[in-house]
Image 1 (cartoon, rainbow, N blue to C red):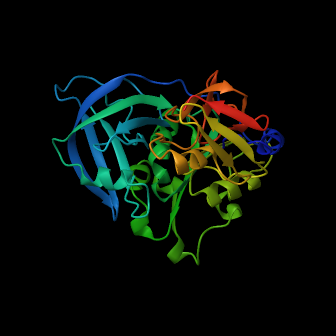
Image 2: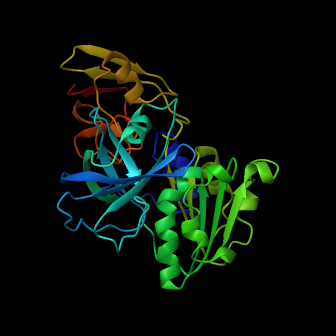
Length: 330
């Protein structure tokens, strides 16, 4: 999901007429749920699916399409994973995670979980809600199908006109696609790159866009950005990204870490989080998109410039300084 960063705010404002308005910050969820891994299955090469349930078998808090869980991993890392199961099933949550060998380690931990392993989760929270619309075009890149699949099911249940395009390197990189093709194969286009001469252009993904349709997209940042630019006027655009947005048009500023007595320079093209962790690697983070609250730090002086920091705090992963200097309680 696109997060405001300094000069990008102006660009986002111009895009607002062709896309959705900025979503409000997602409220923090402090509810810890002690669950157990009850099933582990291979959804695709390098993609594992987990079923999480209460040890007692009791009902779980409800959720809506587009929701995610904060999963506390054995190392203490907290990672966000989209719920990809059926919201009507209150007995379990389902997530699917692709293993990233060059990632920060969270996916490797998930792939090491086994049935019977206790897991603490927080949520569910919805940062990518399904809005009411007469028609939908769903675009998923690889593992980006996870938040999209429950939306497809919901659209089908409503009797809405919908289409799904699921793209990836090859058919093996299209996990969970049977969950959509089983609903109506005529509305689903599975588009592996190796069978179509390479990655799709945005125009290919948007071909056959129903009139008045809301466009939902989840996948790699280049895919999201290309589709965002190509969506015709009159169509609402909604996106969720699994990596931080690039810093575009930023300017440098200074952070003072009051309790550590350190001064950190944040470059024009870098995040405050990366700059802080270079001198304080113990500073926690998770989503890198501003909504989870893990890296929100109390501001002692100065003002952050973004729409995602809670009052009196700074979301290190996406926020920049309104001025030249911010003093943090770090």
